[in-house]
Length: 125
Image (tube, rainbow, N blue to C red):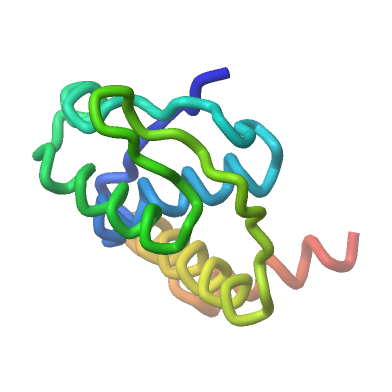
């Protein structure tokens, strides 16, 4: 099964980081497994309308961590290494999502106190 990639243009998170996070998530959830092929750098760059160097940077970082393997002439494939999210990684992801969310709601005039009130009300339900 192919990974579906989408970039959040308003998140403030660099595109290469979003690609890395998406691949890591797909591996962690079992959406893709060892040996599954990722889109080529060129194809993903065209699909996302971004510079191929951005995709190349993401793939290089993924390869350095052992999550993917590039085979010249064949493509980039999910490696054998499992993704385990430690507490530091989980906290980084939570912080990233919170920042994205707060950026979005602030464009609609909401404050952090508005958000906290809404979350508090949801908790009481």
